Image 1 (cartoon, rainbow, N blue to C red):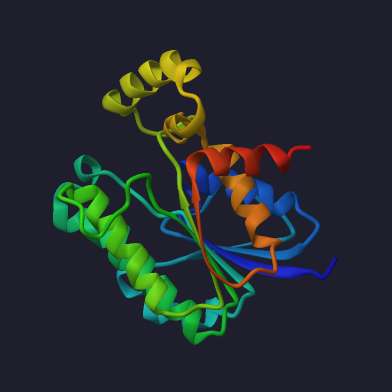
Image 2 (cartoon, rainbow, N blue to C red):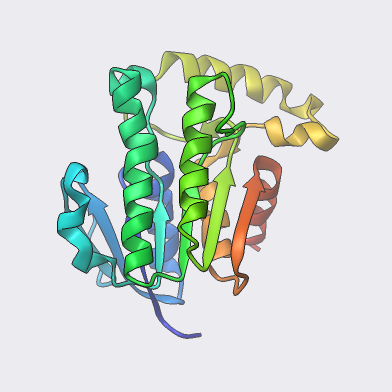
Length: 224
């Protein structure tokens, strides 16, 4: 298996941290570069940590000379403080990463979006996610993989009361979600990370969109 290099943005987040572990353990990669505001408390011979100002991503063009880019950036309006700040993290930063990846000749761009993403949605969150997807599609990167997970489960650094309550309810009702409703089941961040790794090994080109139930299946297959 040929050795590849990958760049991860959002490596300190719930899914990003899991993705770092997955890619470091995968034999296909010999270099994992992460863009961070603050370094992760981890050392590994494959890992390169680059401290960046995401508001000035153009200053870091040289670090995009990789085979694949993974975008795990995301926040909430409450944490961001305003809709404008939320849009900066969930639209402007991923779009800027996409532009730099395209300019550097990156072959695969993998990004976490959200269930319900739709640029025409009346819901602000879903609309921003949809606009982000549309912007990346227009860049015509050889392979664009978009992941739309449902509620993400895992150990967050910060406590989110609303998400905690939602996850408890979703877990209780998950056994009732069957067939076409399976995409609404909550999903572990580790499964999403593993699914992203699985997709990155594909040689398919064009745009691929994965719903939450598909992501769960892909994540499970990676552990077999």
